[in-house]
Image (cartoon, rainbow, N blue to C red; front, side, top):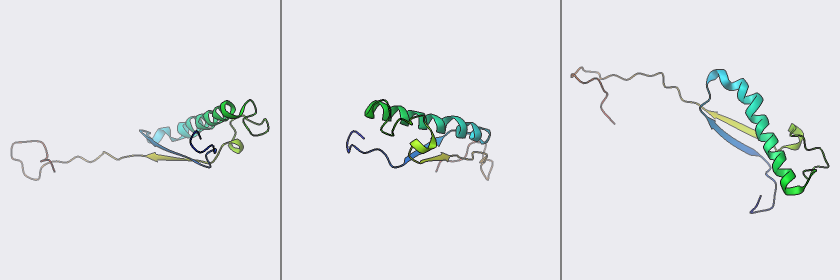
Length: 93
């Protein structure tokens, strides 16, 4: 905003470190936190009504669309050497 004086049309968030059981928490808590932070930003820049006619409560209608990408890795693979040469580690590379 400070460079081009325009509100963002969309918000893209990449998130890592979320377990399978935490998806609902992320959906319920973290995405709403982004919406609330955006509305606080609008209030700071545009005044008390946030530039939206006074309906600045962090709702979906007042915030640009948020794309929340969760990046996960599956590290359940165990690598062992094909030949037992007395060393237990896999050769690098």
